[in-house]
Image 1 (tube, rainbow, N blue to C red):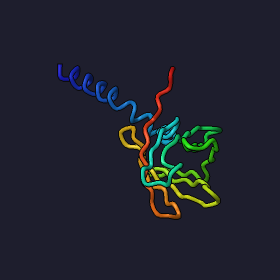
Image 2 (tube, rainbow, N blue to C red; image 1 turned 30 degrees about the vertical axis):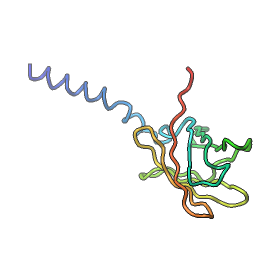
Image 3 (tube, one colour; image 1 turned 45 degrees about the horizontal axis):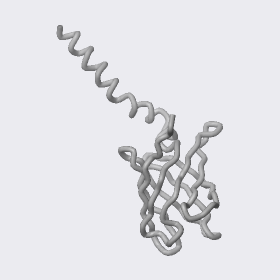
Image 4 (cartoon, rainbow, N blue to C red; image 1 turned 180 degrees about the horizontal axis):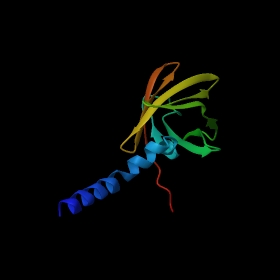
Length: 129
């Protein structure tokens, strides 16, 4: 009986932890997909939009699209580390470094704009599959 209980608890814990373990194997998967973001402190036209991350040839790529614009801004210098993700975008000929991380399926971070730091928050867009 004791052996059965231990086996059952072990299997139960593995089943509960499975989503986290899968992401731990490939940290790019944490960011993959489309995220709707808001940045209330950003200048008008840059306060909302989507960020899309894709894995191509085992490399994380992506782009950003502001709601008030039709332009697509490619992410540059994407790096994933223990503390989250860093990347850069070019907005109006200015390099804007961005740092962020995902916790409990919410992507938060800060963009270092020329006018000062701008915080953002994003939620994953659910696909219609």
